[in-house]
Image: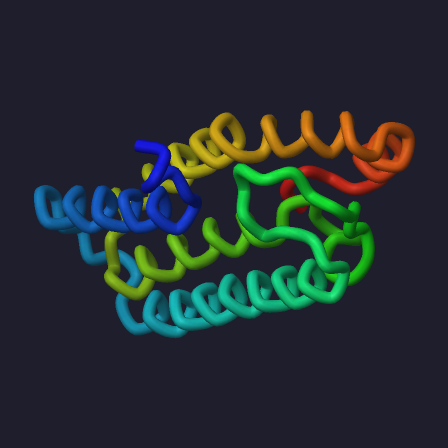
Amino acid sequence: MKNFDYPPVWTLLCIALGLMLDRLWPLDLFGAVGRYLGAAAILAGLGLMLLAVERMRRAATTVMPHRAPSALVTDGVFRWSRNPIYLGDLLVLLGVLLWADAPLGLLALPLLMVVLTRRFILPEEARLAEGFGPAFSQWSKTTRRWL
């Protein structure tokens, strides 16, 4: 499982789950508004991810979730969220489900949130606390985990 234990894989699994729920119980609630909101959420999510990855690249630290970071990035999009890439994953999931008019699929959002928190965020925060001590502690007091 380790080879496939990456956030995009979990995001795709939740997209598949959400779309399967819609196939089983289609409700068609969002209509054209869902298409626009979905496209906006997807673009916002991808944009947020790109901004975070670029900021991490400039800080010369890894974006790979299972590796120890070499720098604590607290500026840019990291001023508003300690996890902008994972927030981007949630926005992409939301966007796809709105676009596909899959309201029951929205049940996959809290599932993805729990998976990302337990499998990635908590271990990453432990590595950050170990590696950056008081700097991480201060940042985590002033910057929310999600938004």
